[in-house]
Length: 234
Image 1 (tube, one colour):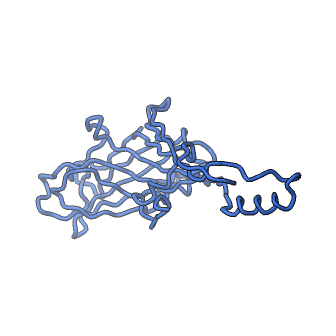
Image 2 (cartoon, rainbow, N blue to C red; image 1 turned 120 degrees about the horizontal axis):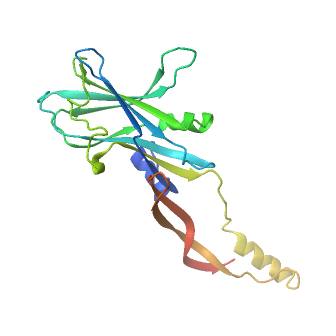
Image 3 (cartoon, one colour; image 1 turned 90 degrees about the horizontal axis):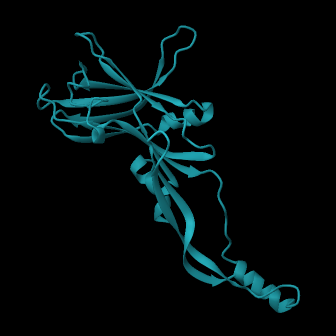
C-alpha cells in the first residue's frame, strides 16, 4: 500500500511508522572560540525512553536556521556526524551521517538524516546519542554554526533543535485471503466437523495517540488494525 512506499528518505518512511518519538537536546558544546578552526556545534540526546522491540524506519535531526548577515549570498554546506565516545584516552570517533547545501540567507527548519546512527543505538543499546555539526563555505572555509544562523539551546522553545525518530514493531502478522474459500469447501464436505465461514473484519485502519512522556518528549503512537472499516466471511 501507500504507507509502505519507501525509497529510503526519512520523509518517505514516516508513513510506515507505528511510533514517532522526539528527543530534546540535553547538552550542547561549541568549538568556535576565537579564530580556531574547524568550528563545530555538538548536541547530546538521551535515548533512554526508546522501548525494546522497535525497528527504526527513519531518524532526523532538525535545527532552525535564521538568515545569516555574515555570509551574504554565499552557499553553505552543513554536515552532520555521529560522535562515538572516546575509549582508552583516545579522541572521539566521528561517523558521517548527512550533508545538506543551502544559501546563507535561507530561513526555516534544516533536516539532516541521522538514520544510519540508529543502527548502532539498537545494536549497542547505547542510550546517549552525540551529534556534531559542521558548516563550511564552498571554498572549504569553516564557519561558526551560530554565525551561519543555526540556532541552539538559546533559541526560543518552539525553535529548539531536536531529534525525531520513527519506529515500527519488529513482529508482524500474516493473513491469508483464501481462508474463507478453504473453510467453505471443508464445511460442505464435513458439515458436522467444520462450522460455516463466519463474518470477520476484512479491512482495518489505525488510530493514533499523541502524548508527552516523563521526560517531556513528544510521543506519537499509531495502533494499527484498531478500527474496523469493512467485514467479510471467513
